[in-house]
Structures are given as structure tokens and as C-alpha cells.
Length: 272
Image (cartoon, rainbow, N blue to C red; front, top):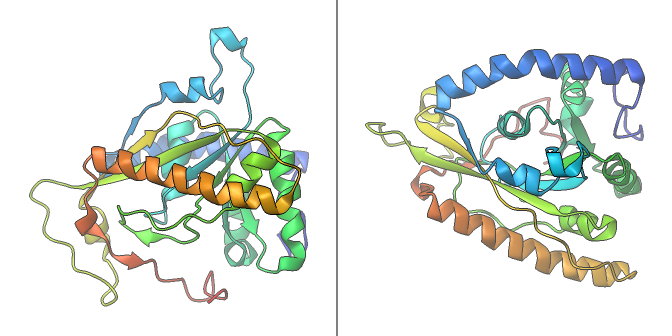
């Protein structure tokens, strides 16, 4: 059943979940091949998945733990990139509600793990419920705390508090995943936005490395929403700075920046 405004943000129908699992397992090998071919895609820091309890180890007796994942948002395909870095574990990932409302595409996105962030404040409590449902699974949910895709950006924009507030409220760690971009050798300079938008040939002139960082424990919950939101902002800034330090240490190329990603007409442009 297609998502409608006010619907549960996560579809827990057994047939839907089975179809989702089958789709992801069939798609992952093909997508991994494509990402390797286009972007020389590599993942660094996978042992941190065991440290976070995301991947089972002998010591954990094959039990996994809930986590909230955060990444900088640099390409429309970011959910694919981070999803492959976690595979065979799967994660829910947040995205604009308008995308999930698009007929056909919305159902596909939800099958791949998409969780819409409600535009209306009236339905924001459903986001609280969805995060709690996932972490009590125990499961994984992924946020892009910049709130928007900034094409090829290696200077992370300010983080919003949401993911970090949920980490405090549910007392689960944040696992930062930094997307590092480098210009390929002999690649031509990339023209800046706003005009024209980047061509496919521009986007594939980069190499992509996904760096999985160690888990970071949240501050203790205070019981006060205002206090926890204040702590969430401080927590967000600390995680932001640690991710930026990793990007800089890995040689992320700030000259690649293309500006905010243009919205797709009729798909995700209603929020503007």
C-alpha cells in the first residue's frame, strides 16, 4: 500500500518486509559493481561496525545492538553508498516526505528502507514513534543531519538536532559515517553551480570513500525535552567536528562543491 500523509512512517506488513528484504539482497551485488565502476568506491573502518554492535561478533553471541547513523549528504545516491557499507545489515534511512508520496517511486523507496520525515508539525510525533520502533528492534536508522543534499560538498554544513535528540532520548550511540570525495587523477575541473547543473560526466570524476567512525555515546537523558534538545545541539556540533576532521584527514577535496542539489520537479520540490 502506498504511503499517504498521516500513515505510519514504517510499513511493518510481513509481505512488504519480505519483499523489501528480497529486493535489497538482489540489488546489492549489482549496485556494488556499479558504484565500484563509477566511483572507485571503497569502505574504510568496517571493524567499527562490530565495535558498535551493528555487526555480530563471537563475543556478542550473534546479537546486534541498535544505533543511529549520521552522514554528510553529498550525492543523491548516498543511501546506496551507506547501505552497501553496512551490508548485509540493513538500515532505514530518512528522506523528504514528498519523495515517498510520488506514485511508484514512493513505494520503491520505502521497500529500500526509506522513512519519510513529515512536513507537517502535526505528524512529527510519528517520527518519534518510528525511531523508537526501530531502535527497540534492535535496528538501525540513518539521518542526514544537514537536512539537504549539498552536491560534492566536503565542508559539512551545520547539523540539525533531530538525530542527536533521538540518540539521547533512546540512549543509543551515534555512528558517524563520513563520505570522502577526491578528484580522480587527470580529471578536468568541475564547473560551479547554479548554472548549468552538474552533468553525469562531472559527477563521475570523483573517487568515493565511506569512512565508518567509532560509535559515540550520547549524553544521559535528563527527562526535560528542552534540556535534552540543548544537549542534542552540543552533541551534534561535536559529531559534526569529528566528521569534518576525518574528511580533512582523508584529503576530502573542498573544490568539488556544486551547491545544493536541485529538487526534481513533481517529485521532491513541494517543500520549497
